[in-house]
Length: 411
Ligand code: UDP
Image 1 (cartoon, rainbow, N blue to C red):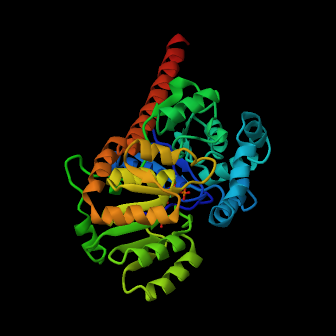
Image 2 (image 1 turned 90 degrees about the vertical axis):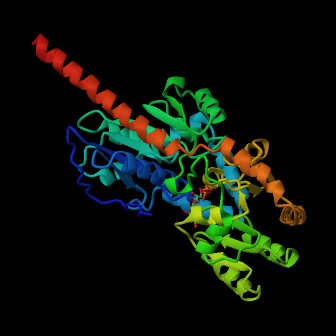
Image 3 (image 1 turned 180 degrees about the vertical axis):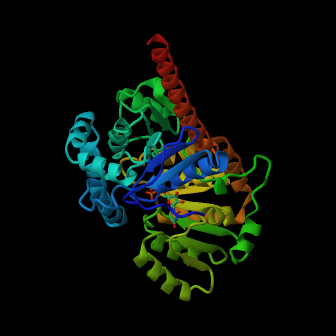
């Protein structure tokens, strides 16, 4: 796994007629934006080596006072302990007029940070993976010496915030028809929308004929080969993971519980203490770079309704138990999983434990979910986004060459 590239203050990409360079803007509000940007970069690196380069830029790194930097910390604090504050903020700002006002005021400073992040480079495409960065992407693209493509890759699943809708983007990549409809309602042209799915890295992608092999994955990770539940809560380890792990250890004496605490260091410390009293059945883990392996080792992934985690579990073929959602952008994600048959939702702890006990006794019931994951998964999304971006840049270059030729011939 490669590392995200932090903002170089003076990026040095040089536009060359035969190569294409792209900048991907993201921010660490949760883990999903960075994961999606990395997935598309991985697709570019694999499919266009030496021809296309993609640079990851977090414009908030050098702009500590930026609204996104503040919303990152707010998101972190809110989703761990006061999700209602996040829900209130989401609803208050979820209007075209509020977004319009934000773009002309607080979001404006990010455009100059993004431009600084891009340095002297002349990118052919600037792609935003964050709802509050599309404006900056358009701004940087418009100031390139040659006209550049500005695009957005939406990382919400069903119910996007109004700030994802930027009517001046050349392309907007969305996960499905519901999100496309919502953006059309917010003024985005239908012909700029590409319904490709939510991008996941190649490590999550199974071959269409291969069967899941949790036992082998458990062996690689040094886990016991027994019924394994993976608890995840996005990049911030949200969703009451400690209480869930404790309840499962108490009431399901034969299962193994792995908990990915993400960046939540306090949760990790508490889990480590609990692990000391749990006879090797609890595996507490901090932020991991090999989520695909952990998901591959699990019989069931128990999580909040994070879009990135859902898309990854579907790609890996792991059944999902959704125990909650962040009010706002995750509101309808549990239905997406349950109606699609790739898992189920259960908020109450008692019922959650009872369903897991049942599945442990009847693992064949999980098979139905596993098959449905294949129908819902969009494992090629990252490749399709990469290909479309490259085609758009090439088409634009061809148009520019044509018009240059025409004016040369007519003069
Ligand atoms: N993630 C990760 N390592 C961790 C925890 C999470 O790479 O230790 C990734 C996870 O694989 C997913 C993203 O963080 O890609 C979480 O995205 P999601 O949309 O589920 O939730 P968010 O954190 O954005 O609220």
